[in-house]
Length: 84
Length: 414
Figure 1 (tube, chains in turn purple, red):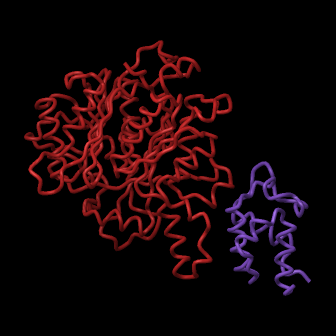
Figure 2 (figure 1 turned 180 degrees about the horizontal axis):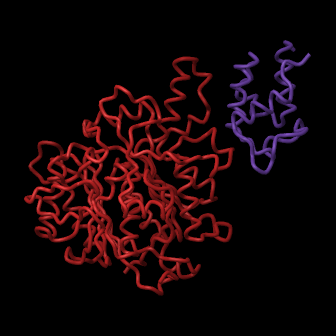
Figure 3 (figure 1 turned 90 degrees about the vertical axis):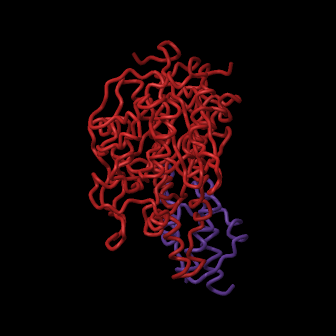
C-alpha cells in the first residue's frame, strides 16, 4: 500500500514550482527525468519539504538530489513509509 | 572620446501607468497613482497613502513557473524588462549571451515574499520556509531573474543606494557598455507594501501623514510635509552607439551623456551636502555647462529642509530661477530604486515630445527658494539636455545628464 501516489506528487510539484508552459506534468511522467520536466534542484528540495509536511516522510537533502525521476521519488517515499 | 551610450528601449511599471504610453499620458494629464493602501488593512497606521500599482496581474505576463519563486517587486521588474526589450526590438537569440548584461538597482528586496516566509518560520517552523526564500529576498534577485529569463550572461550587478541607486545602476550600465558589453538591461524596481515593509517606510520619519492625496506630497511647497512611498519603476535598454547602428535599433530615446555620484559629509560636519558637486561632476562628464541644461527633474524630497537644500543647490549652480525644474513624482510617490529610472524616462520623453510635465499638486513655492518650478500644467519647451537628480537616505547623491540624439544615429523616429 503506497502512502503517496503519482497524482499526489504531481500536485506537490505544481504547487512548489509551477507548471512549465511547454512541458506539462500531466500523463505518465514517472520515468521522465526532472531535468526534462524543467524542475531543478531547488524545486526538488521544496518538494521534499512538502512531502515531509504532508506525508511525514523525511528525505534528506543529499538523497533527494539523487532522485532523478518522479518514480524514484515515489519509490523512496513509499519505502521509507513502509520502514524498508 | 568614449563611444556614446544610448537608451533604446523603455519598460515602465508605475502607479499611474503600466507601460510607457499610459505612464506618460497620466504624467502630462495629472492622473495620480496615490491612494490609501489596500494591500493589507492599514487602518490605524499613522500614514496610509502610497503610490500603488493596482492593475497588475503577474500571471497575465509571466510564466506560471516563475510565480512561486518571485516577490511582487521581481515580477514587476521582469515584466518591465520584457517590455523594454520588446520596445528596443532586441532579438536575444541573435546576440551573443556574453554581450548582454543586466545591472539593476534595488532598495528593499523581496519584502512581501519574505514577510510571508518569516510568518511561516515563527508560526510553523523552519522546515515550512520556502527554499526560494534563499534568493527571493535579496537585492540582486531582479538582476538574476532578468539575466536567467533572457539568457544574458554578460556583466551582472546590483547597486543599492536607496532612492539614488537607480541612477547609479544606469551610470554603471553606461560604464559597462563602454567597457565592451554591447547591450545592458538596467534600471530599478521596488515594492514593499506588506505591513512590515510599510512600517519600515514609516520609521524614516519622512513619510507624510496628511490624509488628502492631493496635499500629502508637496515638494518645494510651503505646506511640504514629507513624501509618499510608491512602488514600481522602470527598466531601460542601454546600448553603445556603434551597437545601436549595427543592429538598426528602431529608436534612440537619448544619450546618457553624463553621470556622477557623491556622498554627503557626516552629520555635524561643516562641509556642504554633496548634491551640488554631483551635478557639477555630471555636467563635466557630459562636457556641458549649467547654461546648456533645459530642464531639471528634481529629487523633490518633500521634507522641508531637504527641499531647501536642493533649491539652494539649484540657485548656486544655475542662478536664481535659472532653469525650469520639475518633479512629476508627486503622482507616483517616491519609488526608491525605481525613482531615478522613472524620472530618466520622463526626461527622455520630454526630449522626444518637447514638453515638460509639471509638479502636480505643488502650488505655493516660497519666492526665496529662487527656483522656476513648473507648476499647474505641462510647459511646452524644446529639450535637448535634461538633468535628473536623486538623493538616497544616508547621504547618497546621484546626477544624470540625458541629451537628445540627432536623427540618423540609428534612430528611425522622426
